[in-house]
Image (cartoon, rainbow, N blue to C red; front, side, top):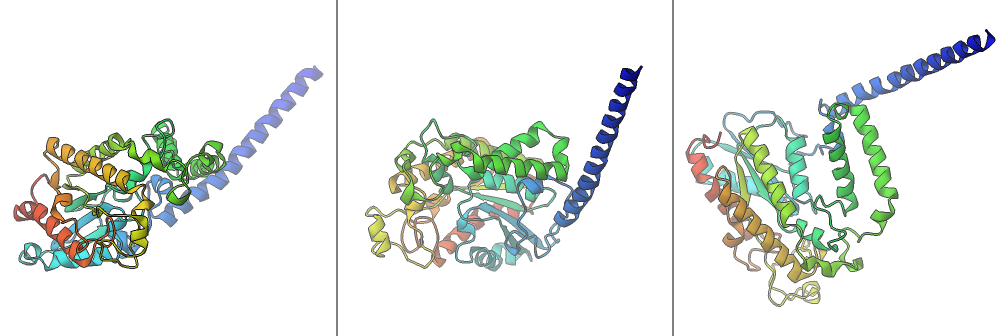
Length: 368
């Protein structure tokens, strides 16, 4: 009799403690859930995984509306540092607005740039998916080629096709995989925040991560020679295809651009430092070794450009312009291997205008 009473007492205490734990968890999670939604002004928990940077350059700080105004031609520029170096975004926007193509039609061009130095094709795919879901654009530009080259500087046994050999991408690849496997749980801001904190801690404590080469530090990279073995083509192609699928679902035309670059035949790091090369040097000029050994970087960009040409040829819904062949390989247009002078930016704008002209002249009705 006493044993039964004792067991019932233990069960009662267990039930009471469990209930108290659940109520406590609820009291923590509900305010956290509501608070995160209010602070982030979103109902999509994925903004925690890949945070939306609310700056003027990507449109959010100065009032990005879901739909453009009737007289607005809105362009989303997906790329890396080329889209921000030397105040590219306002300069590019002004060049487009001054063109007869838009001026004579009473259209006001607004360019939203997602450019961040060192960001790769994965970043542009994630930004388009999660930052700009529900926003309409008249055109989306894809311009990548050099930053993905850095991912080749690992042996094949270390390289990962989601770039998770980098701690940065390891964190995001793991989190996006978790979201795919937990579609219901990942809708919760609280659960997603906890998952992000756990994954970040795991990445930082991982011995495997500490053994990989340093990110974006070529002066201390024992695997720099591996960059000549181009391993990024399949990943780059998959990301381009995924962007096209996303753009098609949103009925937004995606303009694929090959990547323009200039590597002088006599390039050396010493020549670059001493400003003896065929570049219009500026304070923002960056040596090509940031991305890898010069001939390896050129080889990787060429491979990525061939991917863009190939995808554009078999995907008729894509707009395409061969920017690499449009901008002359001359220091008149480049301050370093990939960033432009004013003449280079003008040439880039001219290429984009050529690519968009049939679409604009058709009244923005193509593919939409």
